Image: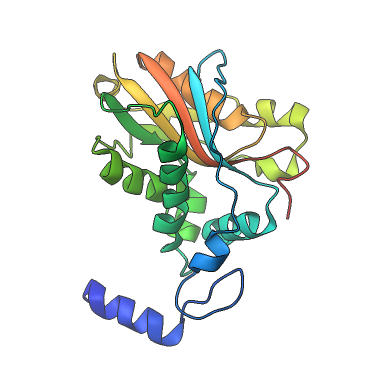
Length: 226
């Protein structure tokens, strides 16, 4: 196996980074383009049957943000977008007047099915979770929540059919790691909430005490399309 530094050198040599906003060489998101993203400075409590609250950093309708997230999810060699996208969540939390404290929480990412994980090489929610775990100095449990069956991509479905599509697709292992714990459930985009709500339901079943969701962006069903 090649050393990581040498691998990164080869990637930068053959696949140089260009800003997805202005095509300037150097980074996937240059400071000028990042400044055009309107990071939310407010937070409205958004509770549901299984989620106590939800934090959303940006509006998915921003074309640049939508492009960044889709590149991160579906194109090779852009795994390095994780720190950039995670920084948007971190900045959102820092901009809030009532800054949340997650010191007693454990991070769990929404999982991918095995076929998608093999094809992409990584789970984007887990990559974001790693960055948040480091910043918040709280533990990450990447393999407690698992996706046990393949589903039709949610972006291809209506609001009514998304909930049925995702129902029963998650399971858990090592419930002792979750029991009586406060969980920060991480994903990239929140649209109808079907995926996160189902994941939270399973974590509740495993014994989680409290679950708060956190995502890069919130979308409407009509926004969550290619």
